[in-house]
Length: 115
Image 1 (tube, helix red, strand yellow):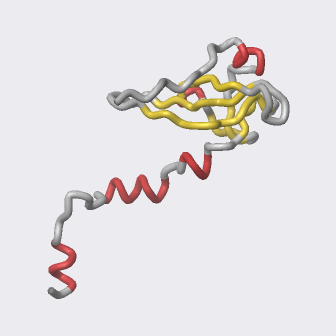
Image 2: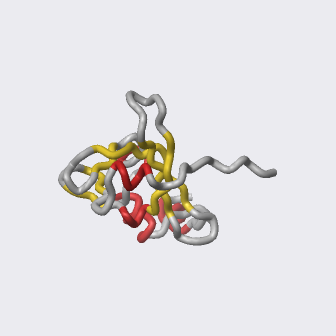
């Protein structure tokens, strides 16, 4: 098999040119979001991104943000739709939020796995 034959082989897992572009320019959730502080419009840290959850049947994406507590003790999670975040000079911003706003949200608890 020469090099020309190798180029024409198609696999079900081949990455399209558009897919390659997304991989090269897209965000890595693990590298750029998980563990990152979340700030309000004034640059005050109001939480930390602990997880990102993607809907199974739609395009809804939520950041799970740890808030409250001191030095990791007494923190709890809230879910915030990812579209609410902005990138700014402080990093991840929730421009319309404050610590009090987030503390007023219901606590997010991971659902128990179903078999």
